[in-house]
Amino acid sequence: MSAFPEAWRDQFLAASSFLTRLPLAYWAWARARTDTPAPSLADCAWAFPLVGLVIGAIGGIAYAVASALNLPPLAAALIAVGATALATGGLHEDGLADTIDGFGGGATREAKLAIMRDSRIGTYGVLALIFAIGLRAVALADIAARWHVLGALVAAHAVGRGVLPAALRWLEPARSDGLGAEAGKPTQNMTLIAFGIALGLALIGVGIRAGLGAAIVVALVAATIGFLARRQIGGQTGDVLGALEQGAETAALLAIAAWS
Picture (cartoon, rainbow, N blue to C red):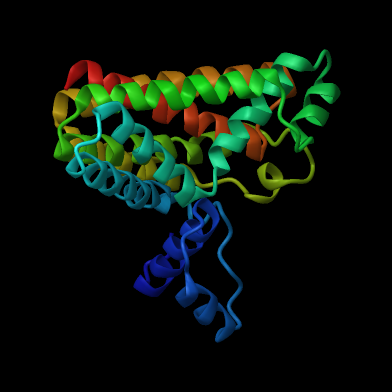
């Protein structure tokens, strides 16, 4: 990671432009005025949890507005989850659906990868999305209090993205092309910094007990998904990374709801 604040800014904006659909006119303007090559995804890995902070805050604001309108907690929670999905363009949800379709519907490694690349969604993918969205909404509705929901969303989105650099580093790309191959491998220090930032945001957002519990559960879930990906297709793809984020985020919210 570069020691220059300008590089940190560019890396954060590059990570945001990839992981969200937020309007980043400044980023496009700045890139057009320089000959410096855009940073790789691996170079931006430290900023993934900070992008999660932004997305979690968007969800928290959506929940607060819905709650102020006296909507039931579950309805407000679904609106919050929907707001975060809109902020990312459903990037991770798409990865989850494609991954579950591939792992569940393919008999061979090649067949699984082919299904994952198909833009159509199957039964397994639909069920995965229903469970992931439903579990997140139920966890938020159980937390209920506006400030607590904001903290939980920030923590969950931060740790959900804080484990992605580890997946990029320790899982080989399953394809020779695509996001998983093009992203590159973050350094070990970059991986540790990303998880450290994510853990710090979780502790600030939900406190020591729930924050540490969520981080431990997320690490276990991420390791399990990584193991399955290696067994099923030989490594990671962009879809696997999306599925990993969704699994980690969902697990974090459930842990926070249980231990807050």
